[in-house]
Amino acid sequence: MTGQNGLLTAGLVIAKLFSCQPMPSTIFSLAAGVKITEHRGIGFLHKDDGEFNAITKFRGLKSNKASFVRSIMDHWVDGNDRPTWWFHGFNEEEFKRCFVFKWDEQRVGQRLYGFKCHPKKLAKGFQLCVLVFYDFKTDKVNYGLLRRINQILENLEEVAAISAKYPGYKGVHKWIQ
Amino acid sequence: MDSITSHWTKKSFADFVYRISFDFVAQLRSRLEEKEISRAEFAKRVKVGEARVSQIFNDPGNLGLESMAKYAHATGMKIAVVAYDDGDPENSRGPINSNVFNVCWKRAGSPSDFFDLNSTRIHQFMPCPDTSDTVSFTSRSQLGYTYPSQSVSNNVTLSI
Image (cartoon, one colour):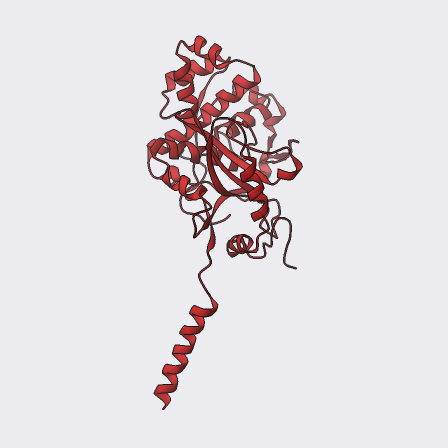
């Protein structure tokens, strides 16, 4: 009887694990190999359905272009806010949280869009740039993507993904007390 | 500091050189913007086509010292090769941004030699790492500073 009870308990535990703790569909990870300091860092959101495609572009970069993009990112992490042809925020109040990294591939503009936040409660000076979308274009800003970024800024699932790395993070400028 | 995988330039010297070539290009582009020198004008000054300038700006690759000196000269600048020991011999954190050396040199009054350096207040004081625009000073003795450094340099960077 004891053995049967033990098996039953183990079975219940396994069932509980699978039913109550599903794998999150959105996860956050730091940009592999890119510099991170106590002041700045860069990461990506990944989603099961592939909507967040910045990470796919980043991982797929080849050779010198991968080095170039990582150099651009390092340059921002090092504390540079210029030159703006490689990265910049947006002046419009509506998009003040949004941020973009830019480069060219065969004369076609490549863009990684995301947002900036301060995910460390005890080190609020730390700036994290969370990259979400990839786009390519020749001129204008993709405001459609910026609006989508504004939507996901406070989405519970995306906030939870970031807080898995930075406990206490509850969205842009919100903290668990 | 957050723990991450090692910096991407740890993989090879080619990656390390790429990164410092990028830093050079970043300084060059900033200079062109500051002096309002167009790409066409820059191409003319260094006697290359605009396509080559575009290539350098979008993929600096492995720029040779002579090319760097030539490009810097075309914008009224010089280059220096700086070896330093940042306590990271395995290069886990990547190179120090070249412009940090340039800014420190300017903060020290742009000395042209050690006599010049020693004749300024920098002889007694040296700037501390400071994120604000205001330069703060701490005495060398407080920092246990000795000069010149006897340490072995592990990294090399290029600074304008």
